Image 1 (cartoon, rainbow, N blue to C red):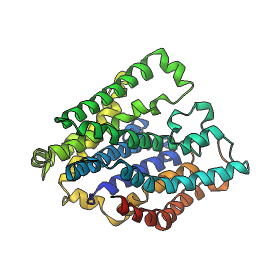
Image 2 (image 1 turned 90 degrees about the horizontal axis):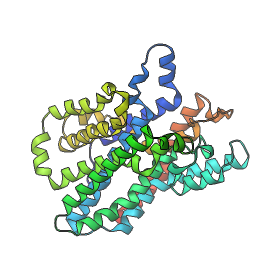
Image 3 (image 1 turned 90 degrees about the vertical axis):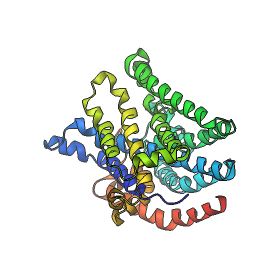
Image 4 (image 1 turned 120 degrees about the vertical axis):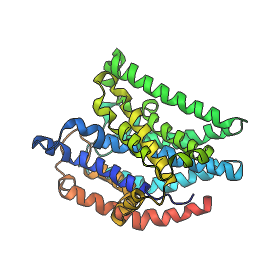
Length: 355
């Protein structure tokens, strides 16, 4: 697939949201009176992950739908190989690092947690087994589960005559079910109290799938109805205002309907992705392609992987020098750069053999 300008810039901002949250920047600013915690819905690490999810749903669906249009089929084996070539190397390095520190008892041993991180099932980890160094792998698990299931769903529906309507219906049902789960089981009922003490239920497959499916819906709009959306979005600025409206709307929502936050923001993000897709020569795309931002976006996956170890996500404090400021943030960037330049880039060259 041709390179899409602007998306690396979005990845850069998203991973910065994660870093600022895990570094405690927002908390520190709040203590000094410079930050209102209500703004977390716009700039938190969770919001950064949500952007990653929506972007993944858009890009993966775009790749698969284009392949089907060009070849009238989807090569599942090649798709899975390409995904593993992209995702596995940094994760393997993280797991080796964690295993080493567990072995010498510098961090708590958790065989179950380690296995769940290695098998992309950490989003189902019981809270009592949660460890700071692996906690962030829950989002990797959600994405990998999406990568595993979604191509097969597309393959089934693309064989039908009116495939696009079946695919759209499937996405709509996933989004509806995710919102229902959040609203009924996670927020309001007694199940929230019982499950919430045992698991991080918001990270289970169904609720976490919503932004990914919204991104997939945007990809369908781009591929199947591209002419229509190009006319609507090309060289038009009003979609950016709608993006800002949906993205900031959670600030105005009453607490009782806050489960809609993810859906509303994902809709705004998806519209932004469509706009960028059809406005590659825009000033916004040029800004997002600034050299520093572009490179930060390229290494954003490595940053996200390694910050989990060096910055941690709790629950206990660390006495390891590498996990203390400023060493933790310096080592995060150093590990991400070395990983990208000497491991990820060479491995990514193999992807062309499975295109």
